[in-house]
Image (tube, rainbow over all chains, first blue to last red; front, side, top):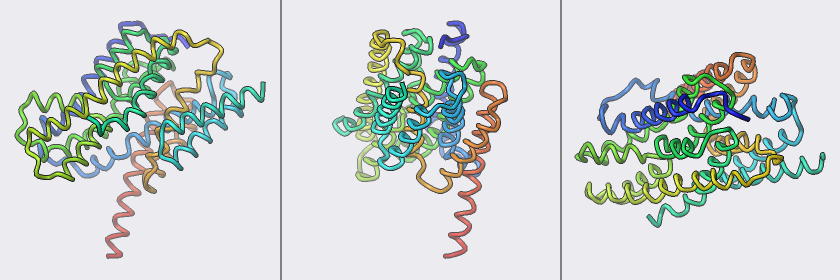
Amino acid sequence: MSSAHSDLTIWVVIVLLGIGTFLIRWSFLGALGNRDLPQWFMRMLRYTPVAVLPALVAPLVMWPAATDGQPEPARLSAAVVTVTIGVLTKNVILAILGGAITLFGMLYVLG
Amino acid sequence: MVQSLPFLIVIIPFALLFGVVALEAGIDIGQILGFSVLVLAGASQFTAIQLLSDHAPAWVVILSGLAVNLRMAMYSASLVPWLKGATGRQKAWVAYMLIDQSYALAIQHYERHPRLNLRQRLAYFLGAAVAMCIPWIAASWLGATLGRAIPDDIALDFAMPITFLAMIAPMLRTQAHMAACFVSIVAALILAGLPSGLGMMIAALLGMAAGALLEVRTERRQEAKS
């Protein structure tokens, strides 16, 4: 997995992402003060993480790059176990551990 | 600061993982530190690394990373009444260190002890935030350093998806959150053929809209009942 981006591009991404993130965090504390933004906008904000992250991860789970895009039982079961533990315990680290153990266990068993 | 300790159990392994995964994606150690110091936001750092290694265009990487952080505008808004009267410089520091965990701790503390003065509130926030942000930066450096020792044949490709899934699961608090998640998954799979990153952004927007719409409907139904 080597990146196709030059060092400079990566630094540009880091710096712009850093500045943008700071401005988001600073927005109301600094410039916007107590001003109200439209309600629909605030509503959308609430759902950004829960909409962006699944969109990012779903294709990675279904068509892993490591198997040339073929669905693969070890990775699918690891995904199911991770989500199940995450939903049940709300504990991110436990969910990651459960998923990792499932993945390596299944890869070992399936050879 | 003591109250930040439970969060460190999550933050440190998470940052270690970020270091390892980013190194694996071909990001060098200076850039990894750059991410952790300048961006200082776990989910968006992972998002950026994933998209960079997918060869997505830089603007897609930046927009997606920012989208993941938009929730922090809500944190910013909700701190305004508590930090009234702080200087511009103080507010800038608070903004820089406004992460999920420092926000959660601070707002709990302020609501429980409403009579604190501004100085005490700022001191609490800075103490809690420093105790979490410094370990985040240090552990991502450590992860990148240790990452070099990990043999190549371990299936690290799946560390990132597992991390994302683990982050999503506890967010599914309401039906609206589940709807947003479900719509975004279905759309992302259908649109996976589009150029790198584009399908994901459309899917995310559809998911957000679904969440917001369901929230409106649920509220209307509750109003009708009462």
